[in-house]
Image (cartoon, rainbow, N blue to C red; front, side):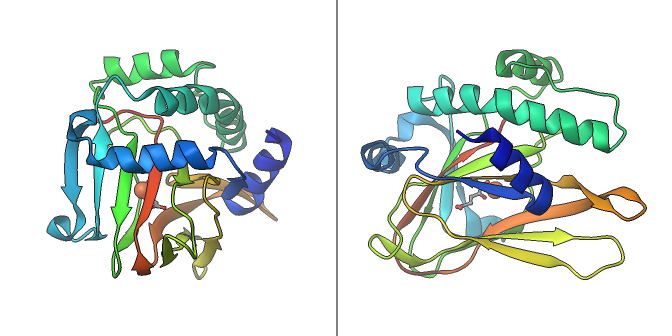
Length: 226
Ligand SMILES: O=C(O)CCC(=O)C(=O)O
Ligand SMILES: [Fe+2]
């Protein structure tokens, strides 16, 4: 994985694609596991909370092996980028080098519930712009993997990111993904270099309306939930 390229794109745009993070068989298997209720700790129907339309489920611990492996292995290079952002923003705190150590700090702070999730959208469904904040502790980067085949399993349903800049109009970004591609993006805030030094922008993400078919995604969030 080209972490220099990913880091540079995150710095410039607040998001970066990792092509082919999962193969087609792994994607199909994960998407099918949505039906296995015993894998999950809770199911959210988005309409009920005005979060959009569609549903998602948070995995229970222990996470399925491929999800646990991705969460652990992606954390270390992302923590290096997150720590660079901390330095740019003049923040003293640093993220530990391993996900085990970071999770230990979440758990000590009372954030003990797993946050990786599977999302399922049918025709007409969408996900309102939001931030995945689940307590005081926030790891600033997250990953979403498209499990379905655009143009085959579904149409529409694009991942959308917005960036709210102080005293400026918001910027939107649409991230084109194929099956198995992942996108890394900022959870809530990221630094931008301005002419008078770095400043913070506020990011949100969502999914535009699915026009037809069924779309599944895997979301990997690195902090646990209170
Ligand atoms: O379905 C998607 O592409 C985005 C899902 C999402 O909100 C997330 O992974 O946090
Ligand atoms: Fe999200």
